[in-house]
Amino acid sequence: MPTGYKIKKDQKVAFAYAYIANNFSAPKAFREAVNNDVVNPSVQGCKLLKDPLVSELVTSLTLKHLAKLDIQQQHIIKELALLGFSDIGDFINCDGNSMSIKNIDDIGEQRRAIKKLKIIPCGDGERIEIELHDKIRPLENLGKNVGMFRDTILQPLDEAQKIESDKGYNARIKKLRQKAIGDSATDAEFEATE
Figure 1 (cartoon, rainbow, N blue to C red):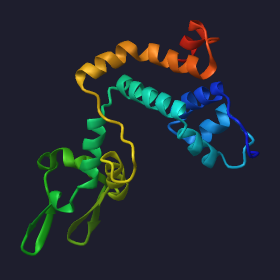
Figure 2: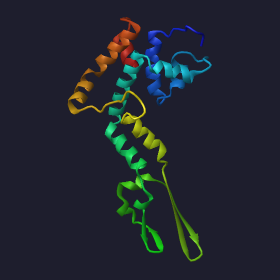
Figure 3: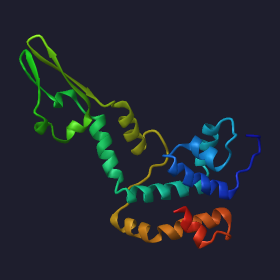
Figure 4: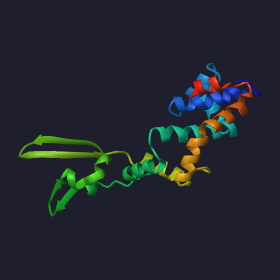
């Protein structure tokens, strides 16, 4: 992208929508909404995510998207914690010289931390292998959420904020859209982007 390339407001809005639609992929969103021929869409997409208008719109769209999926931030945090703090000891019984797998009912929700469970026949019985999901990525994501690695955090909404968010969401997006591309955006154009 040439130095001094200016991204128009309507491209910023399109980028925000494309970012959500492309599963939060900045390079894909940049190519789709701004410039398909750019040499380094990752860098340009990341720069664009720091733009105040784009950042506000992405945050708003993300919260609305998660609400539609009935996914709340605390559910995600709980699942990341389950994976990040899983312990192999939660899955096995040790008594002296022998080990065995706990009954699946005794493991409870921790079983979601199991990535792979193999029962392998061998000589005089069976060998059981358990592989847990990776812990590093969930712990990194938890760290980001609690502010260890970045400056801004999406805060969970309380019930009053959720109601206000649902009531004012379309108006807020419309306002952001109009701010980005001017008063030329009609209601029909706005509804078509939802």
